[in-house]
Picture 1 (cartoon, rainbow, N blue to C red):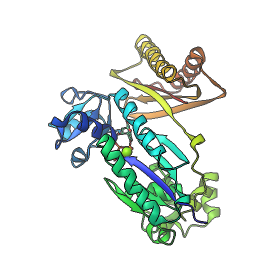
Picture 2: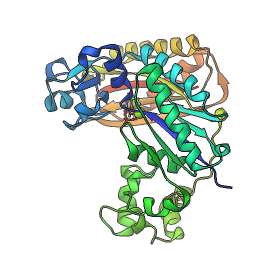
Picture 3: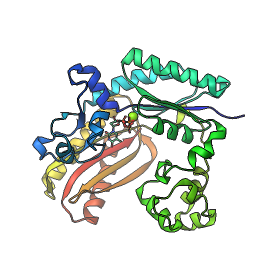
Picture 4: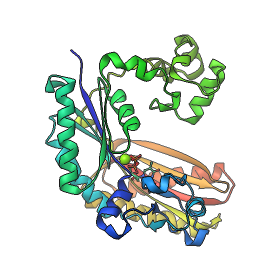
Length: 346
Ligand code: TTP
Ligand code: MG
């Protein structure tokens, strides 16, 4: 029997919340993220509303660049506490629409609607879910529906903003063929570049990559190649599971000036540990992996992670694991540090 999977993702989440709570900003480009400091700010954009995106502004772009693209935009700081509260209420609404719900981030979840009976019925349910979120929170979202999680997610991406896009099983192949390979979850710019070289095609589409035999993909990319072979054919059997919830809590800091000053680095490191630990403990979570993110001069960004043997609630352990990763970074890279971030998987 075909599965029916729904993927819901809020539109420009942080920025949309700001519009709801500050109606005076509606109809204007909004950028949520670091302080632009008249173009001298050094952090990044968390997100921008769709009006600001028309200027080319997007998540993870340096805030100074966003400022240059649209100096008259409304620039707002990240109000994490508010967004977490809104997210919690949205997730409770989604829970009412299906037995198996998997939250994947603050603004994104999968629902298994296989027992809805038909894609038509699932579409009806999706419409009601959209209306309910709009009624209760005044927020728009986009929903994708398909025979598995990956197809539902891509449908959602393609349906944005404020859309509802259904891909029936017999539409999967024609829907997938013209997609760019970077539309397939798990294929980022680096993998895409390797695949383009391998296939000797520029601007590689799914239908082009289908001509590359499985053995070649595996030779180039190992097990990932095997996965990609299936994915471009629309195959994804991972179940929707409420137990799969991967949530991470993290904080980052951009230095006013790139630095190797041990005192500055250490004091930011300690502060980030305090902030992250406070958030973990206030929500009653344990953590099972620690990640350190470092950006060096020139915007070169790297992450290192450590999965613990046992889940932990211990602040000392958080600090010592993070410190080991932090020191490895500092020893491996002599460049001044621009940004330091610490994240845990809970
Ligand atoms: P996304 O769902 O990726 O983005 P979005 O909701 O802003 O926009 P859309 O889904 O319509 O494309 O991420 C959800 C929130 O997570 C986003 O509002 C802000 C935050 N976020 C960051 O802080 N940094 C990032 O690099 C990204 C991608 C998201
Ligand atoms: Mg979103």
